[in-house]
Length: 365
Ligand code: ADP
Image (cartoon, rainbow, N blue to C red; front, top):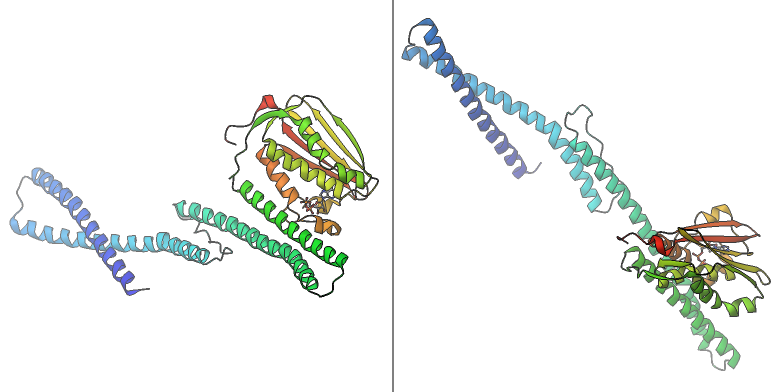
């Protein structure tokens, strides 16, 4: 213990002693004076000066002993009931400040009659658990971003070197330049998605709620993939209920449909089929986007909404595993629901439920 802390403790104990002394002296003097006047009345004589002096000295001694006793009891109580838990808490928080979130504080004895410290300890332990979760997410995120950046950067570097070769045939030059442009586009797409996700997670995007026709929006989104379904000879089937109005942020929801359609076309082989269905009941509009693509196992399905997760690595270069994380976040912000049913080799169906216009959204969103 530091010298300054020791002096502080001694001064604290001494000042406690004086407080107890004054209290005990005041209480005892009042009691003794009452007692003497009552006694004088009942025995019918006045006490002499000497008798009073002796009684006062004995009382003074008792007061001093009592005060010392109380100061010692108070010191011991503080030591075990206050200093120990405070020391445990400060040690743990100091470790957390240094970045160690694995620390946990032991609760103090159950026999202590004041449970306030255990409440504080419980909160600190919860905080440490939360912080360690956030820290893991952060380090995973950095590792994932760095990993995802490395591949397109390596591609750019390699093709950049190849482009420097003299007498390069024209078609090779075009091929290499195209590969560099593709890698740069992937990097730019990933950065755009990271920024969008970041803004959505930090609630920097406030949904612009408007009432609009969901069917029209779905058709517009689907039509963007016309060239893809024609190239891959994919059959399209639609069953869209008319005039289904929703109260939502159209721009954010278009992110959802674009990602789901883009995955459906990406994971469906040539000659497959993509089906779009829009139905509605009183409360919800339900959108189903189904494909007859490669499907996914239950294990893959359990992770698809995680950032950077890619279950099917054969299409890894066509995405970065952020699409469905974005989709999930937007659906959550819209207070909707999203589910997936899939079977390997059979196909996948994503179902999204969005509140209809008349039901509105909660004010705080
Ligand atoms: P990306 O498409 O960039 O890989 P996503 O977040 O959009 O990332 O999807 C995550 C994973 O979910 C994909 O890698 C794939 O394994 C799986 N997935 C998503 N949509 C489908 C689908 N329609 N059919 C099969 N697998 C899918």
